[in-house]
Length: 159
Image (cartoon, rainbow, N blue to C red):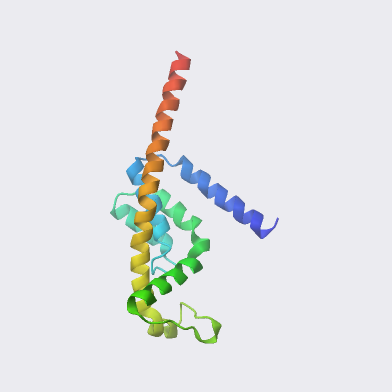
């Protein structure tokens, strides 16, 4: 199988796992939003653990947070680029990469762009959380209402 087919299967599997999570709409939305927002955080390599910790701290669904954090691992280069872009807008500094790339695990990167990256990361994480939470809350509430209607119809047919 090709890489693309495997990627699509992985995404679908995790999406179906998310659909099977049963919890209150608020907790489910919080967990998924923390999982998504953790990709923007400065937790390089520890985003899944950060998603779980924030979901636990703010009473979100921890399983949904972990699944969502794993689901968006592919987008981390996009998130890092966004963090640097937003941070450079705030600090008014243009960030240039010498040699065509910068490696996040080098001291040189953190000396040159550390404050810019962390500022952009904080802003992007909070914005991503709130941009994800409210639509997810509406989705989870609709989903719960549809399940209740489905159970009532099933009970009516069984009687």
